[in-house]
Length: 260
Ligand SMILES: [Zn+2]
Image (tube, rainbow, N blue to C red):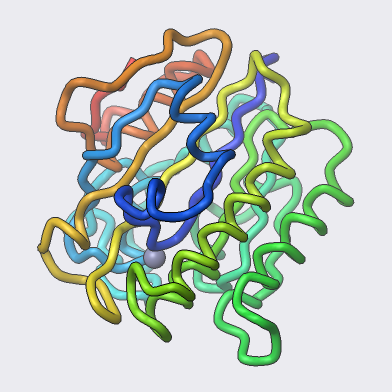
């Protein structure tokens, strides 16, 4: 147990320039209070599972081997979740896109809940995020040492209606409210990380345009100094930054740099 919990909330497909186009009071407050960049880069290909695998495994897709939304077994180094588990910390993952079941080795999660609703046609877009956060809050009384919450509905709105469309911005406002429910109960001395896996352009992502590659990364904790992260940050820098905050040993395989 590290004593200061970590919560990573990933809003799939969030473009940084959408944050000030929509009503996003929670994300904007975290930016004001936190250490942030709206100019970070994700990895190629800018697809969800390759990028989120890189977030957790600390290496690019060419190294961990997952270059599509189909998980490829073959990279045995520990992920961020495994790292917490190996140090006997409590871990949890809440996600609404089932492809995210392989972000850690078997047995590393104390709590793992998937409500595979992100792409559901039976629910209004955004409802899958709300139901997931509601379930997470009902299950977890005390914040685990490490918790991952994945909100997938914004990406679905982008694919169906276009990035930056009215529907996309509305899904972002919903995700912001969902994030607010988590922020409300999260202790201020813990580390809250909010980011996306990639952006999007027209009706998709996967390419190397700035709109697809540029992501926000926001850290908030009363234990860290607020302000803009000056360097060119990468999604690969997130895992080492979190491990360092938690006082965990950074695996040699990880290639990112600590951001504070
Ligand atoms: Zn994605």
